[in-house]
Image (cartoon, helix red, strand yellow):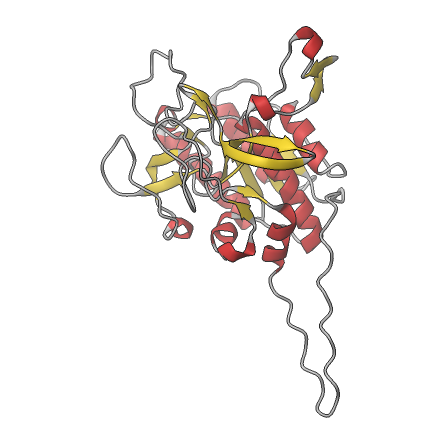
Length: 324
């Protein structure tokens, strides 16, 4: 429900299709993803996934098969947004008997063909964000992020400054997350589920958070941008990492940590490139508009300003795909 409500709030006119699996096994997850990628009825343009677990717990065969599906999605122009996990740099609960005390990244967020979505906590006043830091509510409670032990550093992260894994010496690998958004329960989302309001002060029910809200948040934003561009963004990662920092498309989060890793200027293993400024991101993706040269002997004409940003009400033909 969280995926559907967040994506639907950001892109209220988008077509939402939910896929169900018989169970939480890897086989079922592969089956659902196969159905999404090859759905010629709904023709998805965006997928939101809030399911995941420590990278090492997924078999190599599963990761290889899922990676193939994500590559197919990229080739078909589908953006896949994936939550980076809610257990900090450990990606395990602090009392989990299977945690080895080391850092881990969440899969499938660590796949280089996924847009990995990390979390922040915001402080707002008068309808504006006053401060934004890495989401961290205590030991192994906060945004997932770190360095993969399975996937090589993708080309689009070559200049991002990804560090070696804090727990395993060796080559620099795929860094997680790519981007971030509000995930803290303290600054969380208002929602209604089975008649229960979140938050509900009278019943001491808090608001809802987690990176499971950030993946659909980015999915909704992608739908808005798709509408404004008139075409699907598709595999978004190379585009985002290729943007000029002067475009202001991201709020760079430089405060806080997720356990072992700390936020800093530029990309970091807590909040990636940062949180989006939707209108500036759209303008950056549209690129500069250069007016044609006037014919010889005529007076120059002032350039036409670019189209105003979309008001984020995507047309039904740009579906967002929350996960089961």
